Image (cartoon, rainbow, N blue to C red):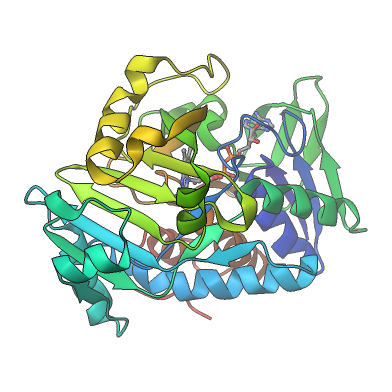
Length: 373
Ligand SMILES: Cc1cc2nc3c(=O)[nH]c(=O)nc-3n(C[C@H](O)[C@H](O)[C@H](O)COP(=O)(O)OP(=O)(O)OC[C@H]3O[C@@H](n4cnc5c(N)ncnc54)[C@H](O)[C@@H]3O)c2cc1C
């Protein structure tokens, strides 16, 4: 069997990896360099964590996601993961942490509730005054995202059954016939075409433009004074929700950057242009950091990164069969990296074995029901 993959982010590369390790031919097309600096997968880190609010399906999937990464680490001869544990906080009446804890208890992975005094003792750099409830779980950590993508691209380049085509934009796809046409007019065909084009997906598949919306997001990297850096470099990751908007903090594990972002979808922007952030865009995030972290007045902005989510209304992933020989693969809404290896592994299995496509879409959307083995 031969797979044609459009897109060289974590999702496309992991699908190529999984197809090739089960003995199939793969051709992968990427419009930019591999890795492509504008891809959503390209940043120093992405988080993986069990707490998932009410999304029981995704909470259940996390153990499988870790197992899939472990298979990849074996193939790459090294791990690109640093455990940190996960601290989930809520305030201002929000109940995301409590709902996450209830979901996790229901699947046998309980979190521990921390009393305010314990929270302040364990995490002295946190200003806990506005925190109403806090939960801790030992699992979760940082995936070194751009290093994973680079290592995976290097690994695939050495596989005899894989052909990588960097700097080769795909102009159109015919998912009925299983063919693609590049900007230069060359055509390629396979038994399955997987469109894993990230925030650009609507250009190739206009019928999905309304369901899969590019969303410009900004993260802030900070310089910390040495004594704060020493504390934060032991973790934890923080997921905080006060009200509707979530903030996450990525600790500077293994010498990587210290980063804060929020999970409020902008639902605007063009992923190909204007990657500079302006001060107005980050002010609310800075204000939230000021009220949550002690010593914030000594943090210095190092750099801003503009990156794109591809969002759905319900934040569920879209991995669906289209036409006789095509798949769209968009596990994003700002939480897809952690599932990259798993999504690739399972889609390759479904394509190769002819497993039920509707069951696959349901599973990828985090809805109840297991994939047939
Ligand atoms: C700021 C930010 C923070 C995030 N935090 C987390 C997190 O903590 N945890 C988590 O799990 N997830 C997180 N995510 C989400 C995660 O990064 C994405 O879900 C994931 O990287 C999507 O990967 P992808 O391969 O689908 O897309 P991409 O990485 O964007 O890859 C798509 C590729 O397709 C290529 N392409 C597009 N069109 C064409 C074409 N016509 N021809 C050829 N190539 C084409 C693009 O150039 C691109 O390289 C975050 C995302 C952002 C932006």
